[in-house]
Image (cartoon, rainbow over all chains, first blue to last red; front, side, top):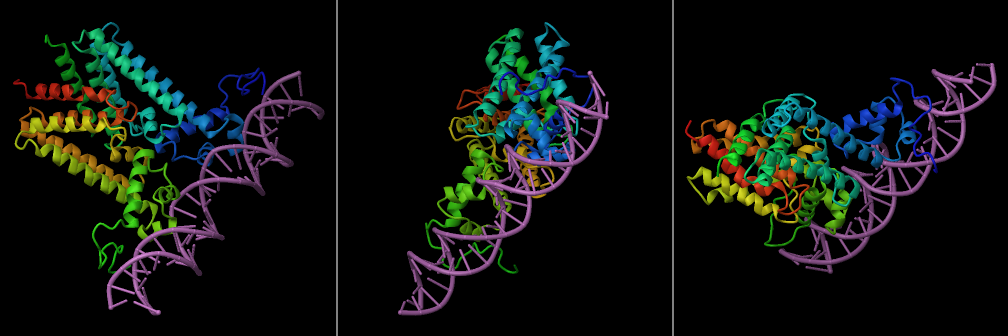
Length: 205
Length: 205
DNA sequence: GCGATGAGTTGCCGACCGGTAACATTGCTG
DNA sequence: CAGCAATGTTACCGGTCGGCAACTCATCGC
């Protein structure tokens, strides 16, 4: 344990070769998302990935390290999704917010959707697990900050409040999606609600 | 296993005697709420309750049975809380909804608040755990139904949509409360958002 | 004082948890 | 082909999980 850290960067590193590490990681992400972090053991992961525990511990320091990486990956994907939705309407913050909720509804229609991975993790992890909870906290604060920024760009009367209201609607959609399948849940009412609160905060006093 | 079901109804049944079963149950509820269902073992419960495993299994059929009872109790308490908040403004559905969100904000100010126990359980339990997931599902449907009813009583243009929007705000508050402590989170923006969406759905169009 | 009942104690079970050692196998590359 | 790195196999460790048997102790009404 000196110069190299994990042997991930190989000299050869060919093209699309399916590394065992990647297979395990993707399987783990899938299982964590579907059954929760505490609900999935290392054995279940490697079995589902068609591998074994030794290969797991050659690629990951511990289960905890895997969980951390899982959350980081989820955050990465989430912001990529966010940026893609927002990028379609540059300079139009109101339309951007609507696009976010449209995209959320689209995702919610998938059977695999189980709401927000980061938010769900917040339910399972306790406050004394610093690394994980700080990660989730930072993510949520970033969501709040971005929504606040968009509300401000709209010229809202109280940008902080409008941003917070939008966040409630967003997370409400995530939370309810856990119970109501497909598009049958309250999440389908998100867009009109979004428009209503935006209108209220943009109305001339 | 024939006539009696659990031996709860005793012939003597004195006054305020602290039954071990009750002590264990209250401890379990507290721990489940704070650390999640999967995050608390039977040993931890009985240790915290100052009892032991045998006393536990004399009072409860299994941990699963305890969890079921925990969720039922949470539901009972939730509706009691709901009814109390609503009862202050009979015949005024709009004011009732506002009172609900006021009461939610009040609870959110407590350090012990970790959002919605039933909703949090939905994150941890998988769909194949029929008893639990059906219980949570029924609860959420009931929330939705009640909000729909209140929206209808207000004379909203689209009562279903308004009820769903309110539910998103309600559950959004629960979900965000897991991360943001005390009154520092977006939940403080719930009330103005509620008023905005209600206004929008009541506006003469 | 008696027995009934509730509750605590010790100890154990099989299963699974996260994690590891030693060894066998594959497969690519020089 | 040799050699080496990546992967798979088996067995194991200590700990904890949910759950149970057997015994003891305390209380309380008769």
